[in-house]
Image (cartoon, rainbow, N blue to C red; front, side, top):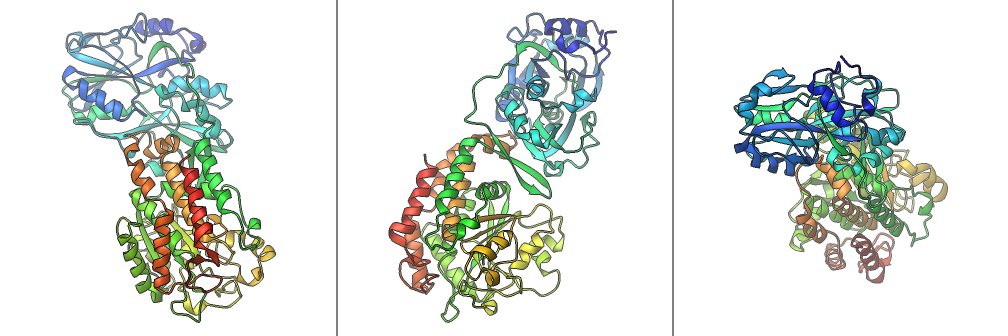
Length: 615
């Protein structure tokens, strides 16, 4: 028997011949024929072949189709010069009516049945190992001389009857400092599954225990390693099991067919993909193209001007808008809060900075088919209900948004509000957004910019953000323009140092992400625009979809039409004025926000943001 030493440098046709002669003492082909494409194999009756091909095209992340044979054809001339699929995999699995009935070294005994069967050769992640190594990234399973770990996930593939199953993934431990390099090394190798589909906590894929893979071997993570997951061709075997065909064959997981094709990098990316951490608990990283990231950075710069000369430049933190929107993009359900009753001598006391930004965020979330709700003060429920109803009539919102209020009745009120039956393992919301919402100061009071305590007008919604810090899987964003808004606790030291009255008014409650804008509404508009940029970014969209199903490019106009426009925001501001909601700085009931005229200031900002999005 031949040992594994030197196999990585052997040419594919030599390796296939050795495999055919059953002279290898190895259990998988990882690390073999370095730089050449390897293939997963699925063999089905010809009556199922067309539907399986459609299934592959619908899920081309896990099932990149390299070649489909004719019925009874045991060769694959476009992949190899002298091959026989009956003998050229290390090991095969036999499936009868969806049950694995055995493993074989050769399929020759089934030659008669194979005359009516079609072979599918599907790309394999073993093919990108050389590219990963060349980028200076360790391949831990090769180091540890074992098969790669493979796991069934809770992610459903796009179904094409009779084929349906959940995605299977491979996991490779990657040092955190090498995550971006790993994405870059594999992104263009689409026939080897392309870029990762998840980086971070396996529980987010429904994987409970990394030490117990469904296929392959457990691979040990070194200190500082992050579990990184790629779509896997064993997904095809799961589809075979679920379709319950009378007879089918696959390679045994890890025992690939080795082709003669070199795995050369082709094409070029639109800039280097970027990796950003969007959550520590659970640990979660996301991917975005450099082009989309730059657009969002430009949005952040546009809204970061300081028309009121408050000194907000000292509060700004780079890439907070990008990271916040990446986290929101991954969320399924979002809770928004707004409302700053700065005009305590008027009824209503609310200012008109906040609600338009909140509704702009809500509108794009609705278009992206996410669940969204708004929580506000009990005393302001009727006002907000009327504003939401009119926003629907004006075409700003697709449908009414659930309107909630929060009161502290017991020590666990916030947990009960945020989670089903107070169970922190079942949060109702993935992300909380506060935009121009009065924030609690260090002394427990709430202050407007003039240092007036308005606590009697503010419900303790801050408690929801404090509770969110204790709930795994819930992230938060605060949007503000002066440092006394909910979520600005993240920059409270800068508020105290650089903002007038900051030592008293600074909000003490942190959000995970802090978006600082010249006017808070601008922050809301920028979040809406950034979410559109992300959803239309191919790199990010594929990561969101986990490389299954199709891009929803047909929805692009729906998403675009949900963004704020000068016309929509003009109508909404007129609605707020009609309801007595005043400008923050001047208490004026004119077409202005924070003392700045709507026309040629706010309208111009909206136009600039939309221009950047549509470049």
